[in-house]
Length: 234
Length: 400
Image (tube, rainbow over all chains, first blue to last red; front, side, top):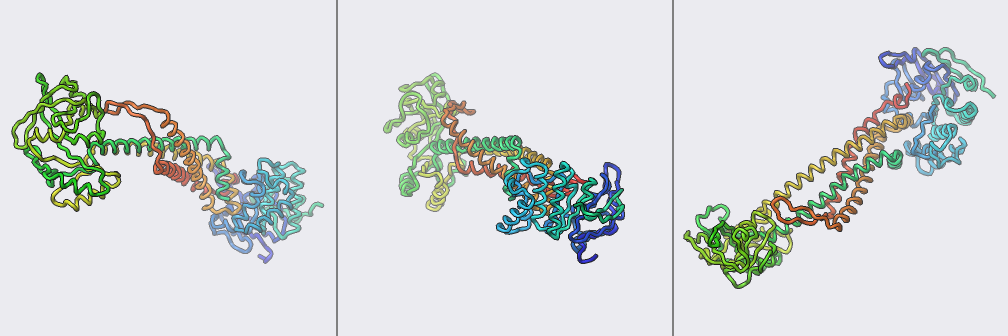
């Protein structure tokens, strides 16, 4: 692992129970992601993309293998003890946006900063900056149910970025958006990636989005099928 | 932020929160109204009991343990000097001498047993321990005048102005009788007592019993709260010569009512507790269920388990606080309505007259109902909140 590697997965196996049947989600997966990369995990539904993201995001544990995140081996640390790692190192963007419904866009972005104990003035600066950056400043006082899907996802991106994470994990971030909005969201993620040193790992099965990734990790039946260096679409 | 999220979530599902709050308010109002009714009943019963029996009763030492062979064997000889000493205490309002005796009463055709209380007429009038049905109160200087209970008057076919004969055993053990004039017919509100009751002047009773002694001294205080302190100082002052009994020791009926009402209040409290527990727990469980994905998101973005727990715990507590405050408000308003409504209740068992329903608004009752609401709602949230905080993040997020 070089000093620029943010994620290192080695020999990961992961099975889960589906009813009475055990399903093997990942098998012998090893993957390194360098700092600042813009990586797409591509593959059909059920290929293991989300499971892999969950392991990288420290919200699930492998059955076998090692997970090293930002230089720390987190494999044997219980998930509830990784709350601080998730807070300090990671940012999450979900397919279904997952904003806190009772909080406004502003408050949703502010929430992780409150968890981190960021002082009030700095919180305000950061929230304003990221609401501005994601183009949602005018909707700052709206609650999620008053926003469109694209606007919600922008708030979610602002929330993920406000904490200044080293790695943002985005699970099918455009799956619930129309293709035009999806493209804009991906443009936004790409632009943030280009202007910060934040690493982005996102899952998708949309070929148009895959084409925009700097690097594509193709997964099939729980195994890494190929590691492509794609050309970023202009 | 914690309180903000909890509070906003309460108002998120308004219908469900409204039902939960209604249950808490209903329970709190029940506690306030019954507590207020209980309080005014206790105060009323206590004061009417004290008017009858005094705050303290003083007897000759040994009275309660000795088995008297003859009437007034353990009576007080020198009541005047004792009374003088007692009435020097500023906490003491007045003292009254009393003798109780029993025997036979006759109208010439028929005899009945009676239970007489010999009193000082002037003091007795001030006590207002009975209600005059007909005739007059006991006159000051007429030792053979009596007041007769309503039931006994009916049985004796006696009316004011009639003469009856009282018979009893004297202090020496012989039988004595005297003719008495019925000054008035009274009722105490207790039917059984009215069937046997006679009130007569001390002088008449002493004449009938052939003694100069009195049985006991009733001590009336300005404030009921001073009873224990005055009891203690009398005990010190007259150690070895007198023994005292407080109204609490003597008023067995009052104690029984207190026990009964406290039991009912406790039972009502339990019902309210159970109802609120289930209602609030249901609300929080439903809230946790509906917000599973939200909890997963919170945990994913780095919220600690304890913060998730506190969030739902705060929700339960806030429901309790809001419900408790609304309950106090509704309880006070309802109590005012009842108090101004002149609602009459039927006579309680053994009584002959009904009484007006009144609710006494006391701070302890309001505080108790509020505290019960908050504690119950908060306790109800513990388990669902704990379950929320222990969710598996991937399951909660709906991912595998």
